[in-house]
Length: 263
Image (cartoon, rainbow, N blue to C red; front, top):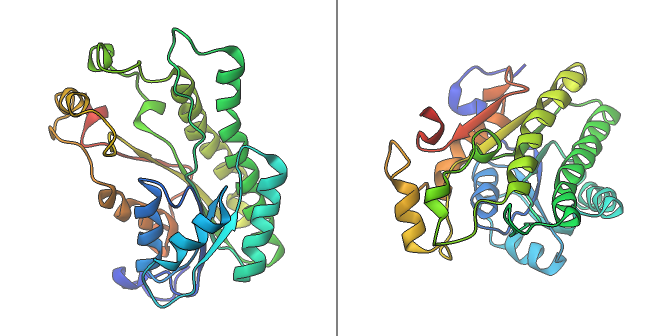
């Protein structure tokens, strides 16, 4: 348990190292910044080591940040990438499973192999989380894992929001993220005795600049807050789950969706 019960001090990540996959993407950039702003040393993992290092060099804070090569769709790369993170940073206390190899096919045309391959993302999340768990146990310390889920791991999409504008929300993605949420619960139950907390953070609609304005307008009508989310609005929830402020939270899924799943 933390020595101090001051709430601001409980969010402090100074002295800790966080590994994040997909840390150069739309949401990953905000996640990486949040960890660095809270004082953590951040290791950004990407399939492109140079890109990871360039993103790490831009992070704020006084801690040293790193970039490593890791492809979560390849089991050997997952193990090697985690080992590289430990080698360059000395240890890893926090893991953010955020990377995603997308499957842009809907119910009409996704193939068996494409659907199956998309589920490999969860295999990568699991093996990387197990590496963190084993590392934490081996050095006699605890750890925190946050898997990035989605509101679409909990509810279906509205067909009328996509019709005539884009393909339907990919069925393989819904299956993946539903699995991510439940896998989180399972790992949390088994690893609590190892002082490793495992939680899930599920964003709602946080569209990037490439999303068509008509799609944004349609999605906004489905929300109580009537607007899309901005990446920085996920920072607080992430820090709660990885810091001492969330020391009694494990096996949970926090949904940040502007109220989408409220009705």
